[in-house]
Image (tube, rainbow, N blue to C red; front, side):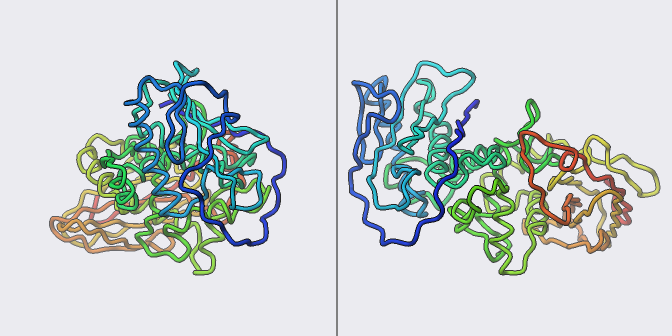
Length: 425
């Protein structure tokens, strides 16, 4: 959609403040015309002010889904309010309305989210033709939430992840039962999923979040966050608490990646971040991530997706195509053709550690996952079941990388070969 965010240099933010008792926010936040260019025409709601709306009807519609999104993320899920300054060391106000400016055009964008460095408050610019597109406006609201959370600001290695988070927020708002109560409160309909399966699955070999010009996936990579948020594997440290934890547990001014934060969140439970990433990709074989609308879209589109990951070497041996070798925390999803019986797999790689998993989907739609230690193992695939091999690049240690400036360390894929018995790729 061309949405983008300005991540402006702020210098070092303050260290985490000592705990203080939190005051109850007022029912009506205070309008602050100093945030953004201001104006003489507006429409107010408890938490937002819409400047220069084409009509009251347009403003009312925009307010409806913004107030619903606010209710879901701030009031229900307890994310930090974007009405609070990211410059202050407490959450006790003052509370400011978030300003939304309807504009005629923006260079290469449907909307954007600038910020006032001194006030520590962001605002939204939205092109008039997108004012009533919740996927656009709630995406930008996701940026406002990220600004309010403070600790990713001015951290280069989080930059591309801002777009993944914003689309995760928009999709969660539109589709999830977590936001159902908030949508109903403001008479907002459930929406369609934003998942781009052609990119997420068809280009799954890319770095897990990649901001490379012309081939980037950072707008589409958000299903990884959905998996972590829904936590279908019950991994300690994941679940709805990952937000705001991915922000609040960020090491201040460390310029670490969000994967480093997740690694710390799950460490007490004994799970490695490589296991989380591998299980995410295994579940993407059939889009089994707790997102019914995304899975329904997969079922309707799967025959159009690009799974051309391997070249046959004969006698059941295959080698990954050089252009599709899995890069840092990327994967290949390989549907298998089987007859009922035992399927044996041996995956061997020579340039980086890999994790291999078989995903087997039963006739009832349930999927079971068979880990392949050291790349080898087997599973019985019954008549009418489907199977897919998932091979993930899972290096032993996390890399401090900037998705907008990938180096060979992250962007060189892992070479591997596969021996299949009882199945073909």
